[in-house]
Length: 477
Picture 1 (cartoon, rainbow, N blue to C red):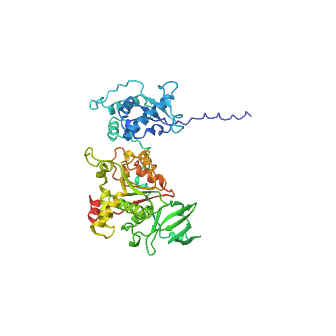
Picture 2: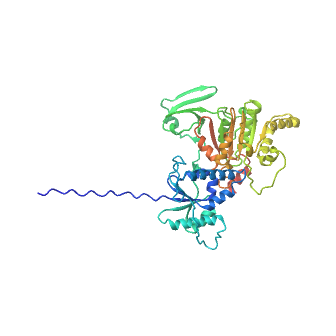
Picture 3: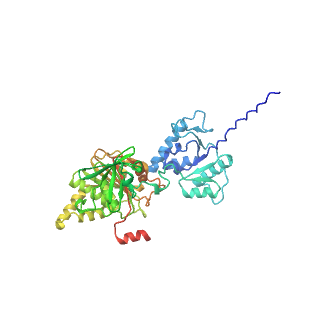
């Protein structure tokens, strides 16, 4: 009987790996985030000559854009200097990026002459970059060639020419701002029954504490506020978290007149949460989000004045904001730094009028003296002169923080020295800075990165408290 033949082994098929993408960088991506060169993982990058020209054109000056242009040029120089065998075949990014990006960087080393439609004059830098993308798409039909740009019109033109284009997403903290941490959580009706096992409760210095473990405990975040409505309403915050157990502490009720802060009481639940953060000496960083009229500036100033003038916890209040005009710029302003910043600080003056009216009796003389005392303890500073400073024992307020980039936000918060409290406030629906979105704003960045730190807290204020006219306008207009 003949020996049975074994079937020949099948040749092992290699899985076809998807082709590496080739991303063509527009200048505004490098000027927005110089480290974008290392953010494309295993894919390749292509920098057109016009991008280098525009970087060179924008490098002069002291603005954030000019600083980023210089930083991008330095990073490109570092990468190119690692190319031993020339730059025609691409420069590996693995070494310069310390493993963050494993693709290659290609620089334009040849003159490219592509006929664009007559409506797109090649004298414009944007159109020259589009010509480069068109050339690369024809030269590499086997791989995706994608233009990356922060300029919406540039992306529209690219798609109209049949090219792939996309925004630069790597700077976005969140894709959807609905996912942004609000700092509050409503407890379900069966919360106490589900967490009753091994629960401990005790009183200390006027607060009630609950140590509990259960299904919801791991989801809670340090300094997150929890509340429950009903017959036995509860407002508390998470003070300790260890594994599956948490400690809840009841709040100071700032809605009651006996706990008023510089004559101000909380008008709703979120304002009460915010005042608990602002008045707590253990909290070093507070972020407040909310629409116009929710009381962000008023609560922050009231808490600041109380802790500067009454409890002497801080030496003075320092207030700053980004000077981005809503309308046309009104030109150069005369005077000192404080006088130049005065037109931007209308919100401060409006709120001081309210707070000065609550400072008690004493007639016009008493109010005038109080106003002078308050103004002597509030300093208005420009963002332009913040580098290299250290604030000791100060109450630092950053207004309109949604217009800051993450890098500017880091610059400001790292100014804080011992004993300083930083309060950031803003409305991410009102961003005036070009190329910043709700997902990439410095305020969103700070809220997300500080979440869960024992010495920081965040509240999103919901209800407007200005007037019935303002509330109605916010709804219908």
